[in-house]
Image (cartoon, rainbow, N blue to C red; front, side, top):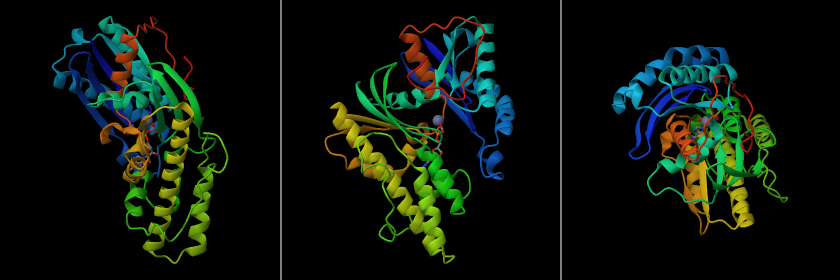
Length: 333
Ligand code: KG4
Ligand code: ZN
């Protein structure tokens, strides 16, 4: 069984081929960072147009690299949401067209389920059940995972997602898009002892998050202390990052205690953050699994893999009509 995966939910176009016996055969990605950089963020219409140009060449590339002919493909998996509607439509239309032409099923994939399963592509994958922390640009979710398709939402962000908070704080510190990695680099020069930011919603029970206050805290700190120096900005970046990472870790510890589980999966763009990985290594008696760095952020390997796991579990969406969803709660079909 071989699954072609297509990802076009935001600002990365990607394709991959996953084989049931041999694992990941090929994956390729085109980042739109340069395209959106001058606007300071993703411009949805530009994203859609660029996906139109890049999707088919990337599919040709991964088919060639994996030595697959179209007749070797068992099904075509594509990201059906959540994401930017115009961007999603490109992958959905290409995926359905190829599937129809090749006479195979088209499999809609939930982008956050794909992030959740991404660590299973690695050697020594975590066994079910586990707690998953998904930290991306659009979502922060804590999920109890009993198996493929068996997800119980434990907590989520009530306002900004963790990645969104990184991006917005990076912007107010004068850093370029994409903000998360830039803020992490700046924070390395920072003095962690200079500012102490709050850990939102950790002083009361519950597993939800709120990060928009931290961004405001960064802004008021910058206004109160701005001496024009790069050092002050680095100190703020460092305090902000420590606060986000510590808050995420505290909630994960709580979720592990509440569920009695000892395995934790952390995935999505923010899981590439090295400070986060250092802090999570301090959680006692818990095995923490991550995707490899390049699969923390958006990619098609996780889409092909999730399509494969769903198909192997019997999912057979058998229709030509398709839709995409900008918003799509994880535990709904
Ligand atoms: O999972 P992802 O690639 O796309 C979405 O599904 O949203 O996540 C992108 C998010 C962005 O907000 C980006 O700033 C953040 O992940 N991110 C990081 C790092 N790398 C990416 N945040 C903090 N530190 C990083 N190293
Ligand atoms: Zn993503």
